[in-house]
Length: 219
Image (cartoon, rainbow, N blue to C red; front, side, top):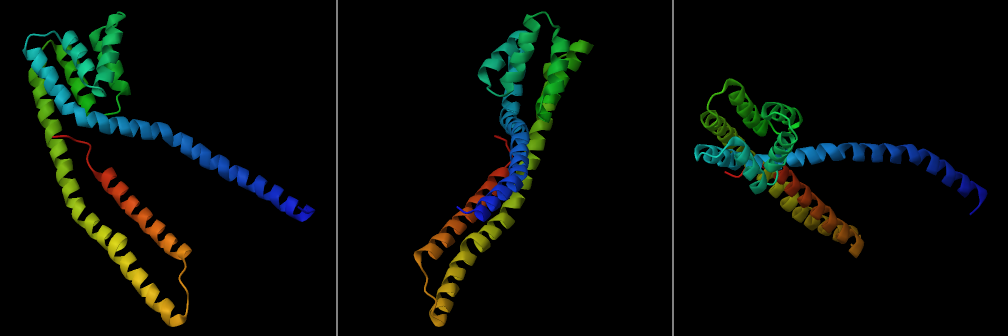
């Protein structure tokens, strides 16, 4: 390696370092956001069933504390926040304060509504089960709306998938083959592999797009 090549390598390394540092910063800064978003989706899958479970327990005569304790065992994601409430109560925090502190850090709107309703019922001394049923009905309606909106999105997404990921690659390869024959251009394995990899990447992106648009509910 001569001095010019060494100089180019040093300059390239110096210029690429800020770019790589920026990319790494953006990547690691997005990790908490991605984790919170994933937890929010997982809570949405459990929130209706967990809330119904809580109502059934309370109407069966179980205390709110014991109902929350049982819920924390049976529901993995929603249970994390109810277990946090139980832990705070065990160390002497009042139930209302524990609920308020958990509401402040809860990443899911549905769970926030449930916890807020429980907290409000405790403050007013009213019944807990009946207001919770109203919240559950609201959550179910919101999830049904999101499912209907997702169903409306599927048709155009399916059309784009058929056009870009299936029809265009098939016709494109056929036309490219015909043109290469007339122009005397020889297709080699590298070009065909590139087309296959590109088509696979496009299909993967469409599947990821459809999965990301799917509402995180289990009705």
